[in-house]
Image (cartoon, rainbow, N blue to C red):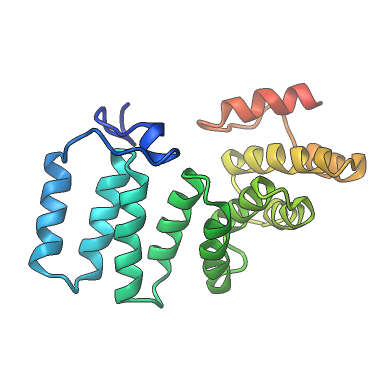
Length: 195
């Protein structure tokens, strides 16, 4: 699969439909598990284990590892953020929302968290709330074009769900066909269809 995920990965059946995983632990997971076993109170070891599971798309086990980390240091932001994303990946939208909302309490102007809260609310079919987060993200001064096109796409989609042409135009008006959108080329193509 490449840079972000291993070629050895779990299936949607185990992660979404909760069937038993059919893959064995790889060296990186064994190493991370050993590190945890050698120091059961080390927050960073659980984070490392969660990331190792994530690399192999073993989201449910990653959630367990991140939860252990959070139990050790319940005030640390990164454990909640990491777990929230895996909740989102496994269609546990309410749990994802709770963790992202916790992160939002740390930084109400984080593009990453605003975007993910908007996405989570969209998936929960809370379109007014999704619009709020996407609109707030759209108006951040430091938003880059790669994330801007993603926010435009999801914000416009949310406005369509709300049946609001006025809100739709707010997002679409920010689009520029010369934007360098990095890996978000699919969003760019769909936004061009919207226009």
